[in-house]
Length: 362
Image 1 (spheres, rainbow, N blue to C red):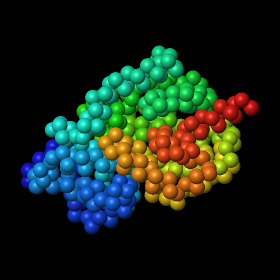
Image 2 (image 1 turned 135 degrees about the vertical axis):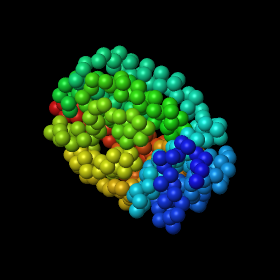
Image 3 (image 1 turned 90 degrees about the vertical axis):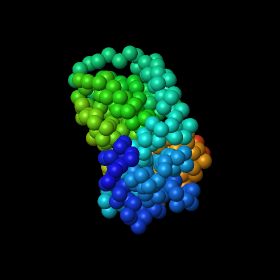
Image 4 (image 1 turned 180 degrees about the vertical axis):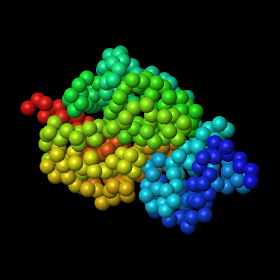
């Protein structure tokens, strides 16, 4: 049978299985839930991709727009008997419509302005940490462009905390992993960015990530695009969990949010809880947690292509928050999304940094 979307070749098994499924993951999609729309359920998105690949559906701007109605949270995969990877299939679909100039204008703008954004992020990193000087064999700290671009002070604090947890000086990765490009439909640009990321990190024995989105992109998504990691990768929370004696109790109550990429993406559920139980006197679980945790609406470029839906997704998750304790999210982008909706939220990496530095001052 002839196929019409060569960029989705590696996802054909997944979209075929989804197209013949009785929608068992329908309830798990945060976007479809808040929109009340069958069109944006994982089944409908993958079915349209399946029929487009078979040549039975003409791909126009409305179809393209639907393929961008996904945060990449992976909630659907938690209920899938076949472990289908809907986000990766939709990233490939977005690459197809981007090549055909059918992608939403907001997504195209992300790609067009990425170089400018990265230049700003690198300039911020240089102002905070100085020029990158390679010290072969050292640990390399990866703050992530979200924090560098929006909370540079947190990036500086987290880097200092990493130094104390490692017990040695660390290099700093100043650029972007390229995830925004992949989400916006520029798969080739993402591959180039990922290769540049590892080329810049050559010689490093270990990479410490503060942003789960970056770590997931470099250790899970990049290999799907032929990019092989060149160093051991560890999230800051894993490092902190191995050094609990360097943390101190610093907040009375915390509600923990399992961020999509830290939990479902990287499988890190226990280390965050171990760390927060050390830092907070009382730890509260959201009603939906672990692999069934709610989404912040911050991923997949949804805040740019559909801000109203992104906000509604965050609000849906915040319904489970008591509004009195600090909401700690495993992802800086998620924490920022909750903050925009009025919640007192904090990124897990920032919480760890403050605790480590406070411990050091005692």
